[in-house]
Length: 125
Image (cartoon, rainbow, N blue to C red; front, top):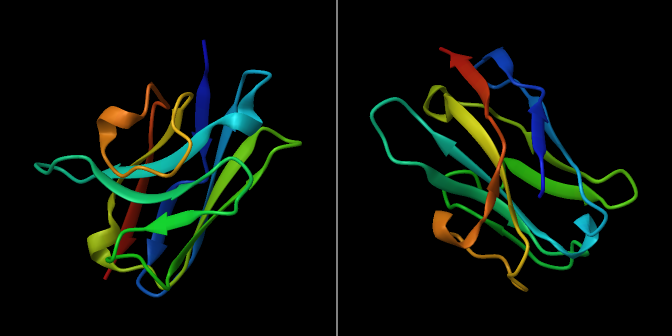
């Protein structure tokens, strides 16, 4: 069983920055592919960013490329999402997800078998 706890969400102005954190339980965190997804009201959950076990592979949605950076610290069992240049369309609940079986970053929700409870990010115009 893997537990994921997100933190760092909040209210920010357009152009501002926020850093999300996701703390994971489990002794094999360093082997997991980790992802960040988001879901806005009335929309489907969508892929934002993902990172493989050692950070050697990262992948981003086109909407956040060049603004968001995903990273991980395996010693702390934590994955991060640095969000810069925030836009109102980034407003959503952000979810951390873990895939305990994937070896490369995948963008579909079905590839991740553990999810956090989500953290709200609101960007005002």
